[in-house]
Amino acid sequence: MINQGEILQTIRMIDRQHLDVRTITMGISLRDCAHSDIALSCGKIYDKICRLAGDLVKTGESIEAEFGIPIVNKRISVTPIALIAESCDAADYLPFAKALDRAAKTVGVDFLGGFSALVHKGCTLGDEKLLRSIPEALAETELVCSSVNVGTTRAGINMTAVRAMGEIIKETAYLTRNSGSLGCAKLVVFCNAVEDNPFMAGAFHGIGEPECEINVGVSGPGVVYEALKAAKGQPLDAVAETIKKTAFHITRVGQLVAQEASARLKVPFGVVDLSLAPTPAIGDSVADILEEMGLSSVGAPGTTAALALLNDAVKKGGVMASSNVGGLSGAFIPVSEDAGMIAAARAGHLTLEKLEAMTCVCSVGLDMIAVPGDTPAETLAAIIADEAAIGMVNNKTAAVRIIPAYGKKLGDRVEFGGLLGSAPIMPVNTCSPAEFVLRGGRIPAPMHSLRN
Image 1 (cartoon, one colour):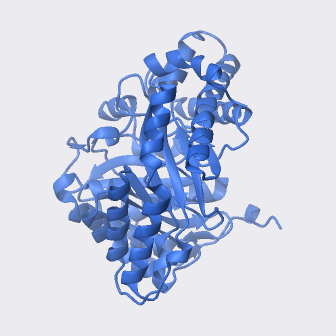
Image 2 (cartoon, one colour; image 1 turned 60 degrees about the vertical axis):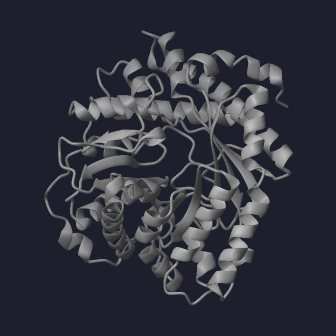
């Protein structure tokens, strides 16, 4: 049982080290909102979200004020819309995106995730309609986020869908060109997507989840960084132990917030996601943690090993603090959202290829990476395929959130603002993978997927 006295032990982390609860995310099932009439279905979606999430923001704010714990975002995730929308015969699913956006604005949340499709083994007609709707949906809404799962360890990789996602990302970049191709920052392509992830842009409420639940995502790279300063010069097993103990405290904060929100909203408590999610603020950086371990710069030889240590220690500390650890849980490495990553990329120390190697051992994948706007769709698709292969073979979640910033070239930067920060345009290998990508079909699942 967690009490307020336990939280007082972490007050210094909150005051000086950027500890926060990054998000309270309410997951809502929309399976009972399917209808053959698109207008009726959209109306049911809007009404249900407003009914269940009407007090979410107010509850988060009251917990924040009472316990002194910053809660940065209040969010909603919903059942992948492709599963709901295919009950109607509409040719385009933009009205669903607009209904979600309207509901999100009415209840006052920061983002809503779930304009999504699960196509790892193939596409239904509804999936295909949703994929075609993504660029316009992200261009014409403000708060809606989209995700597409193109592979799993058990199913392999749907390369036809991967190829389509390269084109969809390019179109989204063009349609949102006046805002730095911001639409692409609200679109994630997954392999092995999880059903209870509270973090955007990839959150959706999986079909195995309950009617409604509360998931909490904590953060705190700055807390880990400060803790490691006290371990300077110590061997790496001592570093791991320091991180583990710190992650325990961070997760306990998330557990308290999740329990309070669950009780006050009368909604089941789902999971605490203990991912270290950086921000552009100085001192709130995963890159700083890696450099505090002894690297001269993130991206240097040894970076992947240091990140593996960090990710593992965070998970071990978290599972000791809560029986409800879930989501992604580990260390995020988004370039635009991490001041240290931005600096390393600008200096040329951090490349796309090194980031890909790092994703073998971190929580998610290639995240918030800006590349030249003229990068071909086939190259984007091939980058997605590479990352999906890492996830598939290693039986882990892997993802790509890449922004081919329209009109931008190497040496430029793109500004997103807020938690999304800014990103330098990173170079991309110009060798063409077009013939490979255009084959389509499916990359079969690896041998170790046969576990029955």
